[in-house]
Image (cartoon, rainbow, N blue to C red; front, side, top):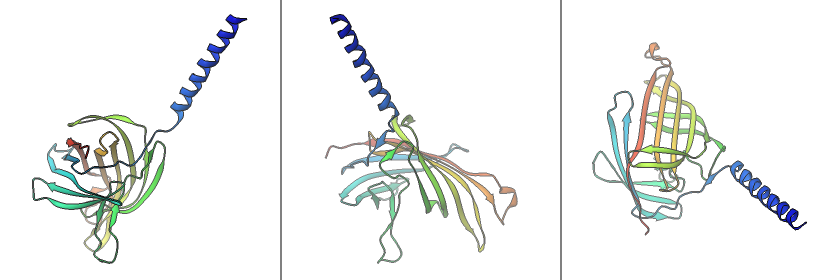
Length: 228
């Protein structure tokens, strides 16, 4: 009886641990907002995947932490630093032409980042004078992501939708796009961004329909963390 009791207890314990492990594996992972600190900095390179040319090198560093976001210093291609504002969701905030209106923050990421969660976006600047009309974003499973700065476990957030751009007073030039962000919790930042943008129709050139117009990667090349 003692042997059976021990055996039954062991089996029950193993069963409990197995169920717990299965339950944990089935629970979607969730990542909270980062808590950036003064002195944190990141450098990114944007590369045209067609030509392999470097289009832009951007360095950002946190200058001030506020209750509703962050103030950063940003330098592009070695030019003089400019001040930018980011929200708690790491979206760059654009000042309105109307000084009485609050800034508009481009929040592509919606924390907490929970696997399987989806959300919609609309009317957000995408690249240059191209505007996102609407998009649907889905948060994917944590995965390793390679960058020049190292390999990071990151959360992919994939957005698909439509874009448009004014065509000199004619019908808007528009199409579809796919935009993916990879956010690394360990360093509290996006480590990679991939954008593909295709044309659907244009009154300027009919042969551009379906053409892949934008095909770029922005990846982290260097970062610095601080415990301040």
